[in-house]
Length: 279
Length: 172
Image (cartoon, rainbow over all chains, first blue to last red; front, side, top):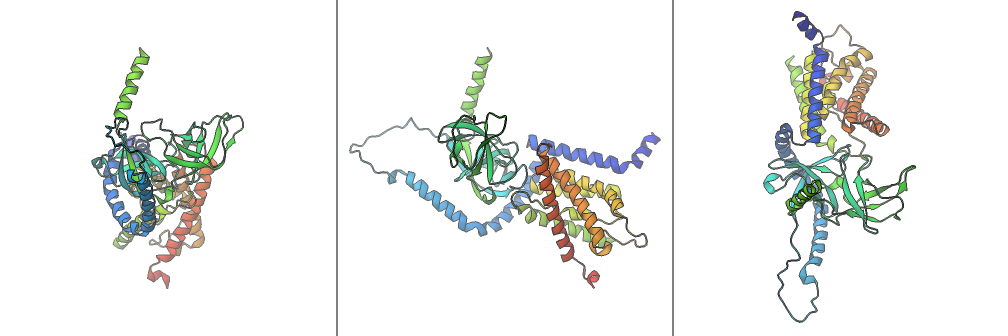
């Protein structure tokens, strides 16, 4: 017993170091993979309030660009409104529209914390479960896709930005409908990489990449970026395609969180199909 | 003694605020992440006992973590920096024995000593932090570039900080 005590006293510096280090790495691993640790939740309640007041002050500096963005979007929405279409039929009739059923709902939210310079970047929004935000919802702006919600507290939510090692979003090149996977290589917040496009397909610079819609999270046809370059690495059968993000991640301010109203139905259908396959 | 504790607490608050409000917002080509809160660990007095050094490092890292949403990342790397501190001080050269009030500061230990000490500490901290963040050796050269650029700018900011916040007595 005395020997153990003597050992602990003699090496207390090293032992304390190891203890604290293991504790912190455990915290890190837990918070990265599960995003639900109680400490992060409690912490984001306090720091979220702090960042909200900071962002309330700095918002004034960005009012001009925000206004421009809103005006542009208003113009776009006005174009889609019924009154901006010329009606050239003479008879009027009433339609109970069963063709169109709302699938996506949009919740507007403000970015209170955002990074672009790290290998794994996250964004904090000022709305949480109280406003109806849940895990695995899409986050977009009028310019395109931003990321996915990974954790929510009552009033705040954490979003995994596309600028992250764990990002895997399915994208499609509009011109030829080819599907690929979008990843981020960690170098520059302006460029992402599209992979998994077979090397025999013809593509060209300037092609547009949009979301494929083959997921329960992102609606189809959301802008992701434009191709700036493409090459086939030696010994590979797939393209490596760097592209320019349509979203400027460094200037995020207001975003929409997208709620898929039919997600539960889609998921339960998938689950029951798996059951059939197993039999 | 009380004055020493007070000035360290004030430095802690100032550095965390600068880190969270200014430094975390710097994004130069996505590579530049200066972490100047490490200066708090750098400037703790020579006589700080080992266990206190580690606990303070842990606390500093955890505070920055809570503000950056990276729970554990800064804590782990700050503890590593705190652990390396005695070794680095031994390597760079110990303080002169005759003065008990000497602190590991630029004005007291001289520019040459401080540069060697600060650069080694910053590099150790940044290397550990970035490797832990990436969590693989796949992109090692890219990570190393990130470490070198960030460490260099952290060092510049720390020098700047040291020259701005000089107590009046020592200036004369």
